[in-house]
Length: 548
Image (cartoon, rainbow, N blue to C red):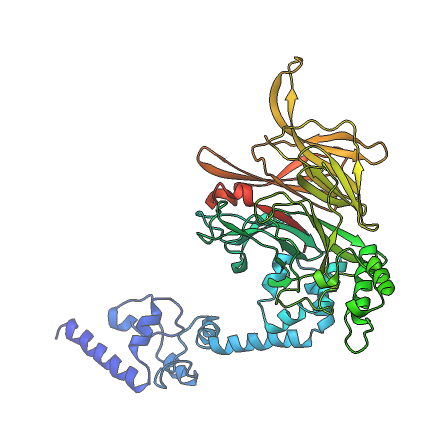
């Protein structure tokens, strides 16, 4: 016989032998190609390959191996070193995930709450917002009044800028654009409550932003319509730390684009005393049998009316049906001092300039009228509080200061008045008890008197002793926005300019540190927000700065 049948018979016999020993050649063929199989059949005698020599005695050792996968017939450990553990982990992912979850939960359980608070209070505001999404425990822990107080008193907060009143596709969408100054990143916040509202003014008190006044269109809701509109006197409060909204008492007069100022006062302020006296008279009034004022003693009646506030409490309109801010929520007191909000000027319901003013006390949740602006003062265009005085600048280049503690206006004569281009209204800024003003003027060059080279925006500082303005620095950008917004936070001045050029709306955010000797400006952001906004956003925008 030839050798071919013999090889075929040997192969058949080998198959039978493999079956009797409980091993399949398919397993050897499959894993033998990888090179990780520990055993192989004695194939040298079958195919004449002298390089592969493995005796059949090794097959008996396979019986000692344990089954790691498949059925009990495959009892051969056909994996190289370390493959057994990998295969086991792959088929036990759920078990590993459960053990990892147990380890993480065990770590959180054993970590005390005070230590966890100390770790979370040091996070930046953006990371803190993301940390609140981890679990319900972290969310509840980072929203308690104790945690907020710790963060307010700590040194871990960074400045944030909030841009309001933008218009998109011809519609007042109510979107709020927030800029993290430390990371130079923009965030978008959807505010449904501000949809359709424009020409309002914002101001920041501690961790809240007050939205005062504004307008809304009567014909086409949401559009910037100046022909048919409704002027608001309502006030909203936005808390970025909790992303919550609330309403406070409305103003006495409807205003659009009012001039706002934030001041810190003592409990002995005349405004607080008047409100307390009015409350005492209102609740402690003694009447016998419900007798009205008409049947009282005329002498007592006249004396009491003379001692009253010029505005009788019976003439004050009732507060709207809103949810007032509770006293135990936020009293805005720190070491026995309160914060008040002042609103003057603006445009009324008939688009007429207003010269009246009001002041709001967050503790009592009430507005009180203050003395009107001085005669022949003009239309107020800018204002800020500095050293307990509310300074207001008019379009006729006049300055008046309202003494908040005493409750009356003072005319301020400054010499010389900084030159300015009348199309650009000046902006008053207060930083570290220093009063600054940003105005646009023509820069003369080439040594020729009267030659108008270019328009520049200059920063001026007022000397309180000599009442003179001194030029501090020049803004690096050309004044393309006549309604540029500028706010201050401690020793920093932030500015946002938006304008349309070559068919596109551009925006620039700049910062100036007045504590430095050079007082130089630097750019924070360029063309990040206004790409998708309309040109009317340049007129309706308003900005506030917070430490979060």
